[in-house]
Figure 1 (cartoon, rainbow, N blue to C red):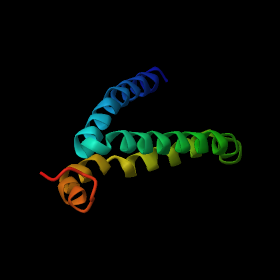
Figure 2: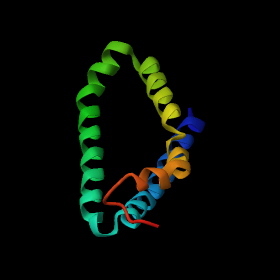
Figure 3: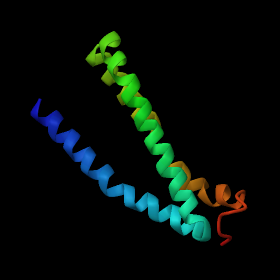
Length: 103
């Protein structure tokens, strides 16, 4: 149980340290429109968090803790490559935006 708690603490610390870098990426990508881009990113994060609060209690009660955590871990594993996809295809995605800076 202790190694699992240590792993959770480590992952939490890493993700907490990475959030400012994602904000910096948004600021660098959208320069003049950075405030709007940051506001939309923050709004999406808060809406997702609010949705999880509403869904979490019934999810845990109906599925049980082991299955709920397994489903959440699988979703996290599926989303793990997303930053690498953005790293690879980021210039192409930004080239399609009329608000992103042109490099």
